[in-house]
Length: 483
Image (cartoon, rainbow, N blue to C red; front, side, top):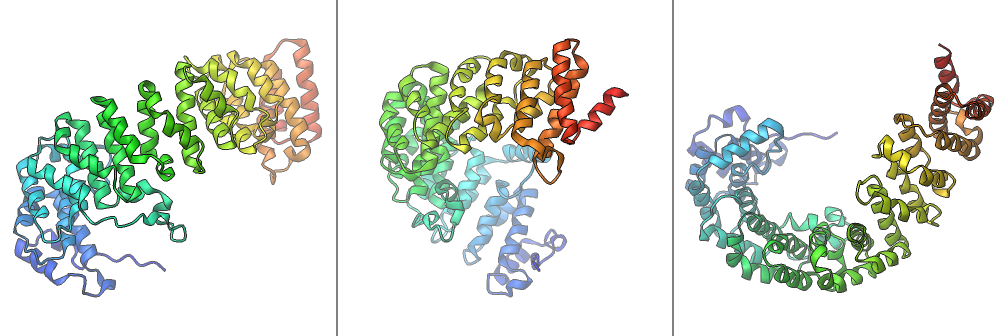
């Protein structure tokens, strides 16, 4: 049974403690006490929460703390000042953000400078956490220098621990690892500052030049995130640093910062990116292949200028085809590129990959009635394909929810479902019973709504067969129209 261990001092008592009492508590609970009764970790969490509630008081206490107290308490106050661990939402988050915005920047920087002056500089991660939400404030050179120090000179991380698959640190994600290290988080904070103020670029240029060559991949991934704002004023420099940062490193190519950078740069600088993008497409990293294939497909869809590369992806390996198919499926309802998606997605209806055929159904989820009518011929092809056999339910759910008049689609879908699921539509132990229920709703509704004698006859034939097979929902639907 799990036991939740609280702080060694209750929250109500801690709220009444004087500064001297706090120093005494920090000295007592230094990590050497009984961990099952609560110790320095639990007390530091309480301290962080109280700091957020009374920033002025604990910012002053921070400046008076003796260097001998456990570093965890310095970091706790820093995190409390920036609300890093608060997990606030809604109105509470907005109110706290306003309070931090109005808090004197001079006091915050005094705390940062004190933290940076501590022996062994143990609070680099917390300093970075605090600086991030201050991106819109005017920070002094000492604060910027401290951040550059932690991005380039701190010892954390030593290695790429996410690579150890037996331990599965950070789910094997270099970015998730990077943002939880000192150099990685400080680099990310630099990116936040650069997004807010271009004038910081001259101050951080040397740090960025160094961090793109960091020996740890996790930090380089964070560096890519920090390069994105540079695209706003010096695309060539951003691309040069980007290529230096990730050239030849497959593990970077599959990360979110890499994908984001490519997304924003590909529109005007494809030629400068081409070498690394083609290398990523040819890599053995699944996420890298899918990421780049998606970005090239998206750009070609909007601009039509990468038709050769886009066709290579559509006819490429399963990862490439999966990425392309997903882009077309998600954008088929788009007012500008939807028709192009319609033209290109049909080639995947009979794809040899079950995974690719299964994902086509999502194409219909966000399509309104008018768009469904426009896509009628494509939908009929889809219904007759292996893809519909793989996953008919997405389309059926959309048809049930829509009031679009698509009698040919509904009749053909019902005919195919009877062939595909047979008598499984009558037994709740099979998932096909849900499919049968949807088809019953559609056919009975179509029968009730139409005045076309031929169409009514078609519906009756299908209804009779569903009744014979005792399909789920057919009796309920018939009773409904009889009433």
